[in-house]
Image 1 (cartoon, helix red, strand yellow):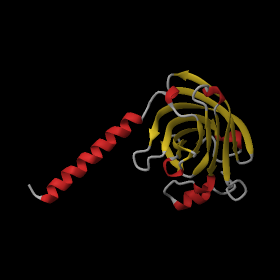
Image 2: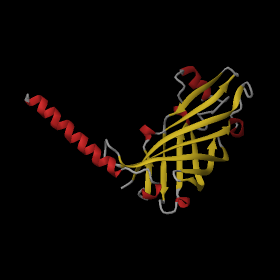
Image 3: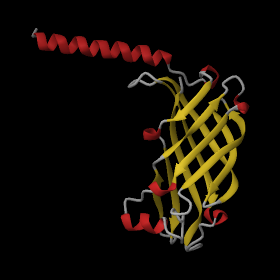
Image 4: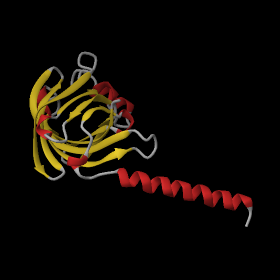
Length: 204
């Protein structure tokens, strides 16, 4: 057997062993998660929006840039606090002209209101790994209460960088006209579905 093949097999065995060790440290049990302050990991956090377009289709876009913190109390999740800021000006629809239109006065008016924020006011467990997180969403200078349906996915050391991390998915539906984003309603839908995927890293 060649030295190259032996070295390759040895390396694969080491990776497999390391992966198994890390997998043993992962948990899907919310009660076993480390409490502390977590920071949003921006490269793996995204808000996807879906809206009815003229009755013909559902159109999708994203807000791919966010930052913020989660103060997580695993022993008493109701005391946890989420504070997130989304960069509205980073909106992405894969169409430059549409991005620019959406950032104009007809829609988000990104020059005046470049950020959207969500600050939680209540956390209510609804299942072993599910919760309703209510908070104040501020968009285009308007603040309204919004409730997120949140699913806890997993916690533990990230396989790549070994940093202790937690992951969540969340969904909600809002009326854009409530926030002054009312152009073309009702031809273009008023209700907007938001789907959020986020990873957060424990601060040292």
